Image (cartoon, one colour):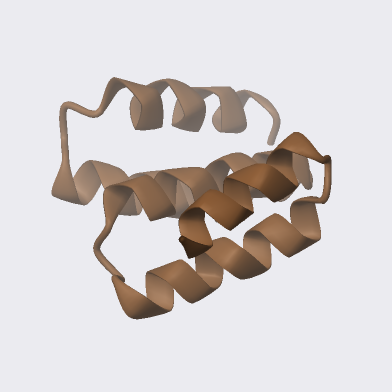
Length: 80
C-alpha cells in the first residue's frame, strides 16, 4: 500500500513525498526490487543521480537481468 501511495505521489509530481513512501516501504522490505527501482526513479526526478545509481545497483545485485534498472542507471550516468 505504501508503494502504491508513492506511485500516486509521483503522478502528482510530489517527489519528496513519494521518496518518503518508498523509503518507508524499503524499511519494511529492504530487498524488494520494485521499491528500490521506484526509489531510483524518484531520485532521478529530484536530480540526485548518484543516489539513484546506488538504488539501481541494489536492484541489479538482486536481479542482474533487470533491464529497467540497467537502462535507468545508464541514463543517470549520462547526467553526472
